[in-house]
Length: 188
Image (cartoon, rainbow, N blue to C red; front, top):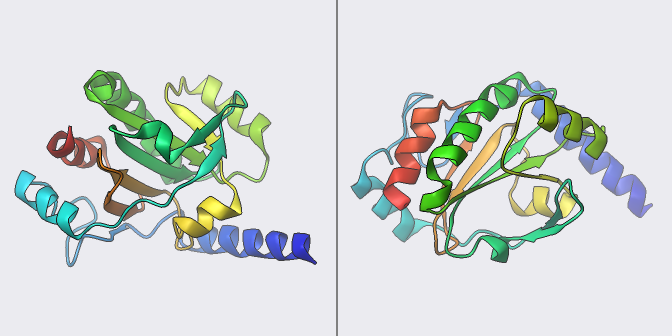
């Protein structure tokens, strides 16, 4: 019965994701902003968001190399957590942006964690990562992290977490490189 519940919740999550066409293009901190904009594009906006932000939920995940990752692993870093899948066109479109951001800002304290919700398992994701030269950590999602981060509306769902472990923004849907760059520059 327990396994059936997990399978059912997973099917609902994936169905909801597919129905939303891989994301609805909204941000938790965007009141009436356009899909490519956020109220947090200025330093002042980011500071205000931090004051109202909540602590990122703790997680434990396994990366593709079999190593355990946790939120504590990223303490003192700015962290982008991207929930994605290999079959989601907007997710795939964001990957090169994250590769470029990681190259440009990792030495300044940026970490990126891609959390795959693929049903095909690690082999599917490993092949995609190798083919696309993904240079940041990739882990497989579990229901605990999907529930904790409320990844129900669509993917990509991306969180920006500050150095203190607070969620600064939650974005559902595709965003270009400059959107993320503006956010992380305020935090690095």
